Length: 208
Ligand code: B1M
Image (tube, rainbow, N blue to C red; front, side, top):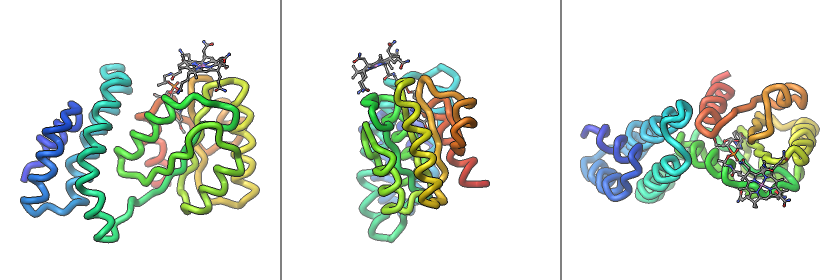
């Protein structure tokens, strides 16, 4: 079965069509993992690429992510049953003192869209909470978001805490006031300017 129409339904955020085509793909005997990798993920990639080129905006991303979520609801129980887990796990949160979560949620959605396991710790997350969650979930990535210049130091503290704990996880950072220069200064493993590029960054770090 051709999965291109499913990819298009995700990219357009057409929930009903995405669910129908996911069901049809299952009935045609396709493996759930193949449906995720070759049907759903490419749909989110299309939206992410458009977002990077300023051809799509936050609402389009949210609508596509919702379609992906509904299709995943059909596939997830089957993936769990087959013992298939996402290849990489990421814990994500907005750093201590900071309650902004719109950008962080978009990053989480894009990472989920790329089929990563995402544990969202919410907002106002202390360095200790990040480290504890990274240990509990054996995270490959710790993703920190900050929207306030006053909370950027909490990113530095979290990077330091991750290093002190001897974690192998890569720490990535982002948010409107954050820059590559700041990333270099605090010794984080990577910076991404937007949610779609965060996926590229994670894939690059995991491949390295
Ligand atoms: Co606040 N706020 N806010 N705010 N707020 C800003 C950030 C501000 C720039 C407004 C301004 O003064 N012009 C300013 C910060 C100034 C500064 O520090 N330089 C500010 C302030 C001062 C405050 C308060 C202190 C106001 C007050 O109470 N006096 C207060 C702080 C509360 C707190 O956090 N402790 C506050 C509160 C709030 C609301 C609660 C009202 C609300 C947040 C609601 C929510 O998030 N649930 C809010 C909002 C909405 C904003 C603005 C208007 C919009 C932020 C946003 O969601 N943008 C913002 C002004 C603005 O940006 N125009 C402002 C959309 C979002 C999609 O973009 O989050 O940048 P962004 O995410 C992008 C990228 O940055 C990147 O990807 C996303 C998508 O591409 N990205 C990552 C984000 N995280 C990433 C992580 C990554 C990679 C990429 O890797 C891990």
